[in-house]
Amino acid sequence: MRRGIRSRQAFTLVELLVVIAIIGILVGLLLPAVQAAREAARRLQCQNNLKQMGLALLNYESAYKRFPLAIMSHPERNCANGPDCGQSRYDDDGFGWQAAILPFIEQTNLWNSLQQIPLPNGGIMPYGTYGALEIYADQAGRGNPIPGGQTVLGAYICPSSAMPTISPEAWSIPGATVTVPNERDQAVGYATSSYKTAGGSCFGDFGLMHKHNEQPQGGRKIGDVVDGTSNSLAVCESTYVMGAGVSTRWGGNITPDNPIVVADWPIWIGAPGTDESVRTNGRTSAPINGQTSPSQMLHARSNDCAFSYHTGGAQFVFVDGSVHFLNENLDIATYCNLHDIRDGNVLGEWE
Image (cartoon, rainbow, N blue to C red; front, side, top):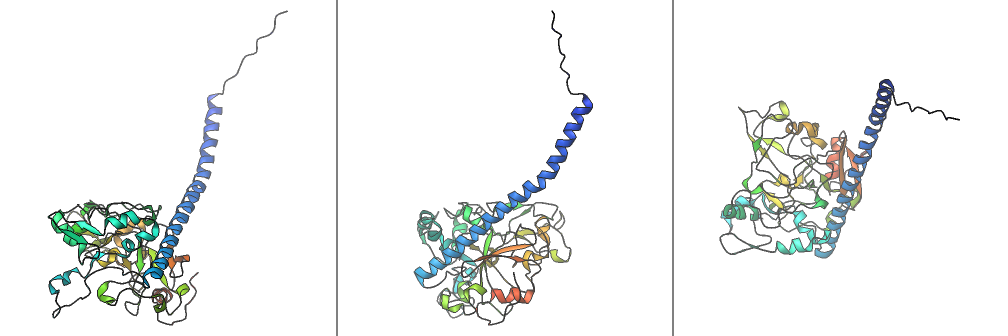
């Protein structure tokens, strides 16, 4: 008896197209969920970075009995009668608070490398030298940072950020139509940071960390935080740059006919002639996220803002080491009070 031979039927073209369409629909439904999960993971890592910096600052204060200065700049803004008047131009230049806490984030070797820096033309520049970044740039030239300053530190980079990890020669700032140069020669080539200290408030420079001429006695003590460590900001996300020389907040733009420069690159080693590289302010002129978005960074309200790639606000670590997400629509008076460590004002709702 002969057995019948069964024929195998393949998918028809219509069936194949239906399967592909179903797969496409499923991918379309799953993709936003996958992207949301990835962003949640990135946001959690960013939160952990802030937590580690908050603990490092507390350990620094415990070891030295003071918090670090935001900038180890020249201690006198106007030194007409002082012995170092020629160096007063270093008001906004010098090693910063993120360099100071390196030993407390397991970067002791990098910290040690910054203690005695060989200068290109000979001699040694000790850590803490006023105007260190400008002095080194004057000898080494644009794009040649202090050795170690080009080291990209994961603890100082929010994984959600799309900013370059090295401060470039030039950049096409989001919202502009052309690539424009970096404003500061002494900033080029340094590793960037996603974080700055929360500085002044509506009432003056009464945040946790400031530059030397604003705190000539040295960094603040934990006892100076009279509003309470759980009510005072220490560090925030601030991952953006500005278009200097153009009134971008009123609709100005960088164009081939109006090229201007890109300013205030956030770099962890310190301030390259601009204090906005290491600190923000909580004032009416500096709302969270600068009344714009990362895709329109050019139009940020000012160069003093907390600024993140997380939708709707930014993350902050308070002086007590706790991390909180603050909404970009937070009442500006409350935001101002959070920046001030001694105003005594009653805080509004901020969570």
